[in-house]
Image (cartoon, rainbow, N blue to C red; front, side):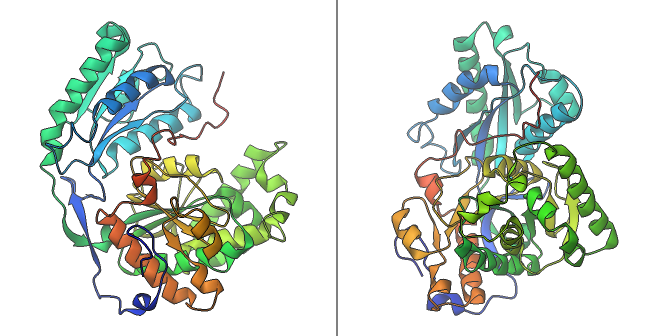
Length: 419
């Protein structure tokens, strides 16, 4: 099943009998949510505090965290937005919802929020709108109030240090797989993804849904390409209507723009016959479950099962929205290789073929090439992926975590926001 300490290839073990109630070892929070990691985060409301946030997080090296064995690290949630944009309205709401959701993500045990002080995304307005109260696990530092970068960094470090004992109190314990919330992504696809990685991931997600977990399918451009085929995938007429609404909204959003959905030729080089072909392969990541609900970008997921969250094809932007929505694991399929990962939520990367898996071995976690070679059925590979999700959720490090990839991949959706 494993061809190295960290990579998974699939094999006879994939045919093991699935337990009636699958479990993983997670961190149970006070509100009943469950994290797969136990991080503290340094979050910025605007890009002007990014360097200070980086300095705070960089201070907490493995050596300095050695006294807190249950804390997985201190991660920076830095981005390029928050200043020079509309102060109110949809675009500011999207940014605030994304930041607030990531602060509430179950992988996050506490946060220090940094600001310069004069951002359009005012730190105090952000906290009020997102109903975040300052206290033991939410601290704020404002550079203009602290007296500059160095003083703010010192205050940020002190805030994290005050939260370390609280975060360290959490210990992994066995919990039902119903507590998994998995966001689905793709990057650098090829046509083989439509045969191996995507349907195999879909088979694994069917198992997570059977266990009572949640699965987040995004990539609204795929909906546009499949608009006349969406109704059978919806659990209710209301959900079907919501999906159609996303299609109409996206068409209006991309009208007159050089977007992927408007460039069918882009897919030809990847082996897809058309954008519809690529979209059908993308939909397969979600498995055969009916879509139970449709959510705005970054909106908190409240229903179990397969759901759809509005988002673009860009993996960093979609991943950031899925984390804000509550995803505690991410799965990404690729046909050409990807070095993507996030800092707050582990990213399991699945290769469509064994050649790319071997070539990108330091970055990719699961080899789905056995499906192409006839050694494994899609269902067998799906069970192998399901086992891998449980293993990584229990603390085994993904390649992106081993490489420390993810500290600059946080990207709230910049929906035409700049002034």
